[in-house]
Amino acid sequence: MRRFILLMLLLGNMTLANAQNAQIQRVNPTNWWVGMKNPNLQLLVYGPNAGTLAYTVNYPGVRLVKTHTVDNPNYAFLDLTVSSTAKPGTLQLVGKRGSQTLTQPFELKARDKSSKGAGVTAADFIYLIMPDRFANGDPANDKFADMADPNADRTNPFYRHGGDLDGAARRINYVKDMGATAIWFTPLLENNQPLTNEGGSMRSAYHGYGFTDHYNIDRRFGGNEAYTSFINKAHAAGLKVVQDAVYNHVGINHWFIKDMPSKDWVHQWPTYTNTSYKQQPITDPHASMIDRKVTVDGWFVPFLPDLNQNNPYVANFLIQHAIWTVEKFGIDAWRVDTYLYNDMPFMNRCNQALMDQYPNILIFGESSVSNVIDQAYYVRNKIDFPFKSNQPGGLDFVLFNAITNNALKQKNREAFPIYETLAQDAVYVDPTKLVTFLDNHDLDRYFSVIGEDYDKYKIGLTWLLTTRGIPSMYYGTEILMKNFKDPSDAEVRRDFPGGFAGDKENKFETAGRTDRENEAFQFVRKLATYRRDNPVMHTGKLMQFLPQDGTYVYFRYDGTKTVMIATNTGDKDISLDTVRFAERMNGFTSARDVMTDATLSDLKLIKLPAKTALVLELRK
Image (cartoon, rainbow, N blue to C red):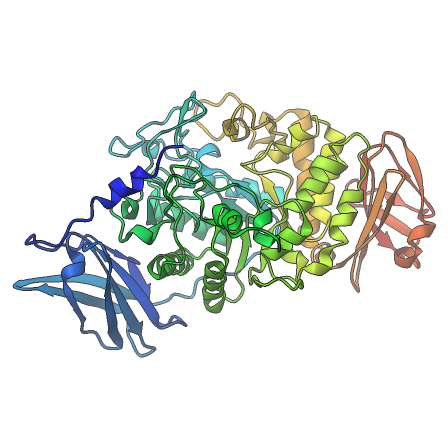
């Protein structure tokens, strides 16, 4: 690992204030709104010698409380209060130094009545899209010569391919027709990052996880206007939008990394120190402090500087950006990248600020852990941890592992790991807010993991769409897209066929798919639509029975409906004796097979063919 000289070189840009005239080049947030619940606002003002100016504000209802300066004279942080009496308009930030006077406009907008922070719930089904690889609607924005990475080449798996928000907007009806109710994009913020050498290959930041400007959607995706347009179209179609947040780190080309406000803006080490990627030291009561520090404060990779959220200016910057994003674009929920590597008190503060302003918003973080106790630590839980998280939801990595790496992948294909995982739901305040999944952009594709076995495919999708939680599905799973991360992540991030000019096949259309791909799409569509239209499948209670002889049976039920999910993961047909399930089946005499619409007139013995999942709506 290279030494930590890099950051010291970056800090070298901090020159002492001199006779040079001051300039204001940036103010973040770029605007704010009147009528927000929290009247306090901290403006980051940046430009040559911007921190040497004496600032004043003269606007009715707005008061400049304090000006903060830091090591770097190019920064000032202005604490404002925006009272409930303030009116929309443009105030002037006036900065003076000697004979020089600068005036910087800052807009206070009126809040509109459009949906903001509506949240996603167990009634939703989230479709995860990597925008660069989904669909290209505007080839004119594929690349820009003045950006650090000016490349776009679909023949190179590591370069940008040109997918954008316009392309995604043109596929909204496809997503809705499939039965999804929400779209989650991997990050859209500007990633003006240079190519990086990873494993001997030069790779672009098409994935989006290296922000270089928090207040601009990457113009290769269409910019802020395209995002606003997409969200308006999605909401009009009845779809919600989930945005990917990254608080832990930024890109090495971020403008405030190139000229840092202070040395402690990022986590500093005597020599470069990577995170261990180990979860255990965080919850281990016997862990050493150094192991905990390395996990949280170590850098994720050398080209993603690790932000120091204990720095109050860093914390305010990130929290205000989160609120600004919801208010400006009207997103419905946040997925938080690398949640466990953040400072947890900061995350609680950030979560609370969002929930105070938008009470219905859902926040679900990525904590790639291997057991229920560690997973519960990062969400609202009932365990006596020294730290209590306020995060409402989280990605359910434990259930993911139980389904894909145990119940379907192992030779015995027993469903007990699923049962055992759900049996520990008592540790969560609300397990229905956990987001469930079978794969994503960082994992091997589900269809490949299960050996391209279509029967297993249907069982796993049935579990995903009928058990507790908020199901999410990675783009292309509905058409059996496959591949492993080895030799590279690019293999699981291939372009959606039909999303780009010149594609030989268009799998957005029935005619462009094979018979098996259409069968898979219709399977997802029918089950997702049933789930969407029947509240019992998302608000109904869950009762599961111990798996026996390769079978796993559970029920979703409420005061109006009872649905039985019966799965046989074995290789032999079974006649399932239902006497054991009398607790939930008494009084029911027949059932409708949700997937085939066939009627079962005798519920005493139910035929379960090998590797089959049945979804039965019980009837009296």
